Length: 426
Image (tube, rainbow, N blue to C red; front, side, top):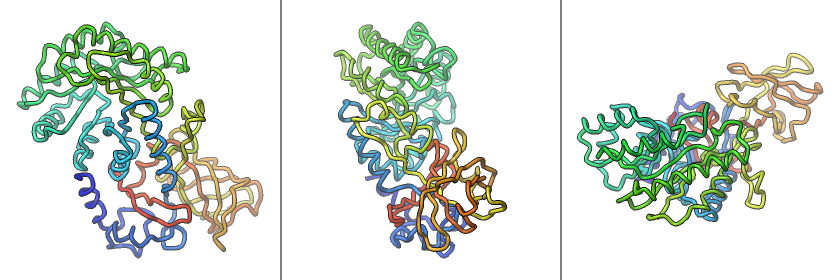
C-alpha cells in the first residue's frame, strides 16, 4: 500500500519545461491529468525527439520473468538501477518480485521513499553517512529487510565502526561476495579470503552473515562452461559455510547471482542446491529484462539458448524527426547523445512515419552512422527514402543508459495512445 500511495504522489507532479518532449499545451497539468487524456503520441502535441516505452512489451516481459522465476523456483529481486522508476518497481513487485536490487545507497533512499520493503544492495557500503541513515531506517521499521555485500576486511571494519557510532540496534545483514575471477570487478578472489571475511563477521554484532553472492556476468572470457564453474564455486562456498555453522541462528540462507546474460546458468546451478540446515533463498537479480533492447541484450539474452521458455520483447523506441536532408545520401535527425543510449551500440532505424500523411513503412535503406550531441547521422540509399519532416523510429541498445536520459517517459500502446508517464530518478 505504501508504494501505491506514493505512486499517487508522482501522478500529482505538474508538467512543465523540465520534461522534454511533452506537449507544450500540457504545461500546468498534473502527470495524472495528462495520462487520463490518453493523448496520441503522433497527433496530440508531443515534440521530437521523444522516447516511448511499449505498454504491451513491458507487460509481456514482466509476465515472462515472473513465470520463469516461478518455474525455476527462484526468488527475484530485479536490479532497479536499470530504470530507477518506482512505477515499474511497483509492477515488478505485483508480478511476484521478492524485492528490488540497488547498486549504491542513493538508490536505497529512492526505494525507501517509494515504500520498498526488501532491498538487496549489490555492493559493499563503507560510507559512514549512508550507514548512519541505514541504521536509523532499520531501527525505525522492523519490517524493512536489507542485505548488502561485503568483500574486504577493511570494509567490515569501516561498516562496524560506523554502525557502532550510529548506535544501531539492528545488525545489517550481509552476504560475502565471491569475485568472478582475477581481473573481474568486485568480490573476494579466493575461498580463503571469503573464510577470513566470515571469521571477521563472527567477531561483530553490528553485521550478520546471511549468505554468499556474486555476479557471473563478470566471469573473464565468459563461456557457458566458465560461468557454470564459477556458479558451482559459489554454491560450494554456501554449502561449506553452512556445514561449518556460519549461518547459525538465521531463518534462511541467501544465495544470490544473476545478471541479464546468464540467468539460465544461474537457474541450472541453483537447482543443484542440496538440503541445508536452513531454507535457501535463491535470489536472481536480472534487471534489463523490463524493457529488453534491440542490440546488446537482444544478442545476449539467455532466451536465445532456451527459446522454448519464451522470448523477451524490446520495449523502447526513440522517435526523432528529419530536420535536414543536405544530400541524396545523407539526412539528420533531431535526436543525439542527450537522448539515445550509445555506450554499447548505435541506435538502429526501424520504421519511418511519413510527415505528410502519417503512414508507417519499414526503414529500408536507412542506416544510423553516428550521433552528435543533438543530431543523429543517417545514411540513405536513395534520395526518396526520407524527407524533412518525416519521423524515424529507432531501436536502442542498453536499457540502463536509455532510461537515464529521460525523466518522464510515455508508456504507449501499439496504436500510439499514451496511457501513463514513468518518472525516473537518476
